Length: 238
Image 1 (cartoon, rainbow, N blue to C red):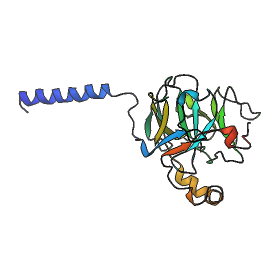
Image 2 (image 1 turned 180 degrees about the vertical axis):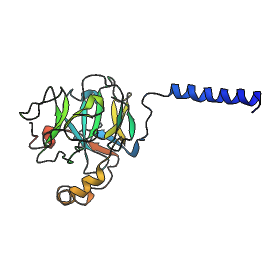
Image 3 (image 1 turned 60 degrees about the horizontal axis):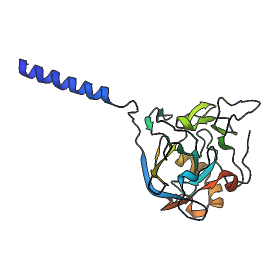
Image 4 (image 1 turned 120 degrees about the vertical axis):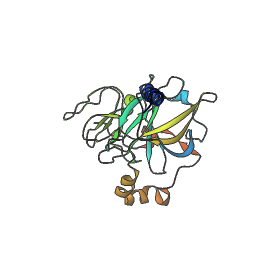
């Protein structure tokens, strides 16, 4: 290699190293999976105003399928992005909260262990303000999503990262877009370890009764948001 080519080669290598050093910490291997863009609404069907979400309150909507529930939470504080990984070690960059205060987040409400999820009759999984105490498995922190079926605990302020229990990965995130002009929220993708195939396989019979033939249909255009206490008759608190 002559001197000119050697210098060019070194310059190219240096440029690559510089680009690598400039890569954000949250460089990810797992890309977001886009679904239909769905506007979140209130129970009347009117566009939901993000500023009207009560802090640290459980809200539920369904996305990306008619039968797959999602927790919508206003954590009451700004939430920064996090670097996370699925159970298959695929890393991804959860972007953090949205809304005027960057405090609104959304996660699949299907537990990553035994696929426990909120139904209209009962919910063994929910966000708990403060500490969720249990004689066998005390809370490892405040303001966590706690599954009473297996006592997996997820931190929504860290992208639903698993802090305790047998769950093998964070709850799958649902990505939201906040329109600052009209204060609305739109769901448009998932990010992280989806469990929808396993969910539909495990609960096929139950979903056929509860939701009917539309269980696997994609949600289109709009999704109604309700408080968990109104959606579910018996939210279990352990």
